[in-house]
Image (tube, rainbow, N blue to C red; front, top):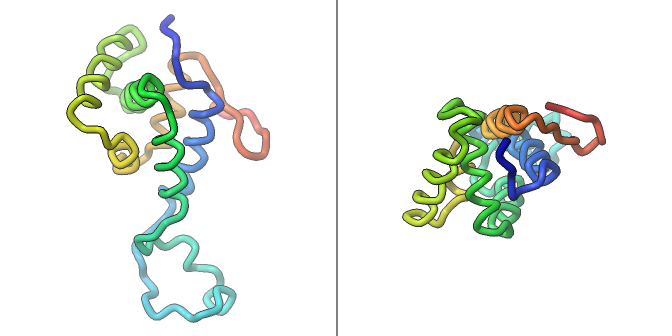
Amino acid sequence: MPTLTISAEDVGYLIVKAREFDVKEANSDPDSGSNATDDNMIDVLQDNGSDPVASEIAGFINSLSEEEKIDLVALMRLGRGDGTIEEWDDLRREAADERERNRHTARYLLGQPLLGDYLADGLAAFGLSWVDDEGDAAE
């Protein structure tokens, strides 16, 4: 079984944040009131271009080592079904080659729909689980 350079806890944090990011929808209320409670807090689920969750995810990913970034991309691709755990070395090599050409790992990953699910499935392929913010074990 291959090993990961990024911890399951770090991936778990990204899973939670990516799922928060994925629930955002296009801005459907451009004339929003100044008080969020006036709009029944609907605006918190709208993407207005200045998403603090996206900034938080990008900051976290940018703080990772090169090896962790490569593993993160390979893990997402594993969870997406681009390869199997037996092909981990190939997935990782492809991620490293792409990293050489494109240094924007955070932007690339944030552009992947269902990123949180793919990362969770990738961890599951390793037989690993993660713990969410409430301390509940998840797969």
